[in-house]
Image (cartoon, rainbow, N blue to C red; front, side, top):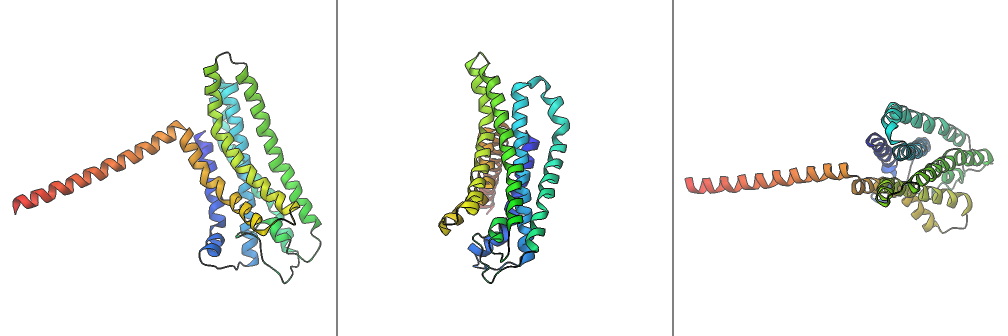
Length: 273
């Protein structure tokens, strides 16, 4: 679980860093220009990392399924595949999104080149083209169906099996304990997929939607998962909470010691004087 959390945090950090330059440029420095090829690079990394995060969430759902439904074989089943899971997630995320910038680079664009977001999003850039974008639109739809929809189905199936196992447990305390281990993952799943589906549906079907609504949904999609995922797991995971508390306690102790040393040093200096 800690290795999967490390992968999740690294992906969130990469997602935030890939969009940070343009977001800061727009909202802090009012700099609203991005070169076309830089835009293609940004949207490639952003979409790829979103796919990687979706795959990691599926792996975490499988991890919870093994931990609850087959706990005696947890180490033998999960430990050998952790590194392979991360590698497959990265290869899948990068491989299926390479055609997106390639297809966009072949399109002619109109004079109006204002994006809806402070970052480059595939559907948003595609709307600015002055040519037929059917291929781009169909490929984007295939990506959504073959990655996020299928991943959501796998996660839902894992939790159906988890509920089936938990409800067959006789003791209420054991049921609560087993379900409590899944709360953090469920929160992270909702925090990731709800904004993701929201921004996808708005760009695909919300042509008459308010520009402010489009901007807010895009910001929720960009900001909420990386910002709240560490908080969710810090609150629910005892080991992480203990480690953070230990660091804070050591820092406070060191600060108190340094203050007491300063006070005693001043007193010694006054006495010597």
